[in-house]
Image 1 (cartoon, rainbow, N blue to C red):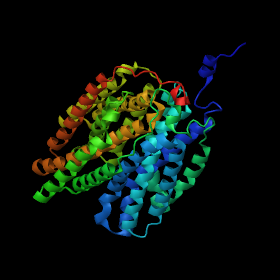
Image 2: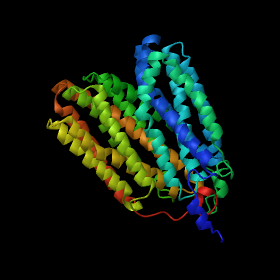
Image 3: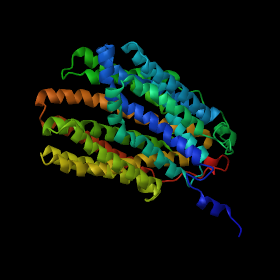
Image 4: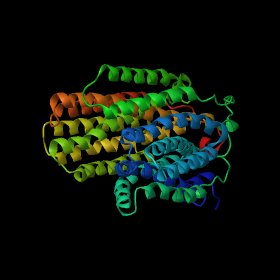
Length: 477
């Protein structure tokens, strides 16, 4: 019997001999990064108590978000010029060095510096993950690998905080940071590039005339945006419900800096590229902003207005984690036509967020809100994973790094700006109406619903498929 290439492709799976090691590595690495990111919220109160410097506490969370913007920009061009294997290795080295710095920090200022270094490593790693999937796997396996990647980011939400809390109480908070590098190293050693496709510049496979080298990354614009985002995060964190003229001026300056930097970070060459990924990038940013607004304030409302325990409020978010993965699985299995996946997911988010708002604002059972919240997670999993799949599918090998960076840049900027501005508005409403009033929470959920509707409209516009990429690297076949 003659085995055709098509037959061979059908027999391939993520755990076939040629992909098994890479699949395990690309699942383990983001799992460890996500676990550590979630663990910080659990262990940092104890660390701040031991090290002092409570005034620096907001920077513990703002610093990695800000510095990751710089490394995301650098990683995009670096991936296209040198290939993702080198960038991934460099990112993991920086990430592990940062964890050691945090775990051994003698003071809060050193810990904050380590967290900033950690953000640099995370930006390099996350951009490279997408490009590695596009380079190492054939097209029919890429959607399923993105589902695995989504699970690797989501599953730590089920076990990370509890495990980190237990380790902190029994061994100490430092071990949470010091142990992760011991697991990262063997995971990196698993990652292999048998064909060399992930170790060469993307331009090497370009045969459609796109042979010019990737442009220089806009590092100065990224640094400006990082400072603006850090300032917004700190101001939003410390807002006390009253805006002094100085605070208003600082907010205005920070927003202006970010707005000025955005055209350099998401230039027309990306938004209007021949790959037609611009609307996917915009959809990703709006989706991320919508989901994070609703998710951050939902447990706060359950605790403040309904008197639920933090554990019970967290249980509702755990259910969302499961529905998120379900939506991601649907995207990976390509169960819906490509042209409707993002809009359908965003529509589910809008319905789920609006229904949850209606339930909570009319003081129905909070457990009913847990049910109405499920479509939000399902829709986010479907639409978020679809933006990743479609962006890499439509990206020429010479632009995979930059397009991956654009996706994550849009997500990070949208989340940071919306959280900061909404945080200030929320504190103002809270002071005016009181902690148990539905007004502050209703305003946030209304904003999240409006953003989901906007994402649905952008998703509807993601219709026309880009031309098929020319043969070359594995990701371009």
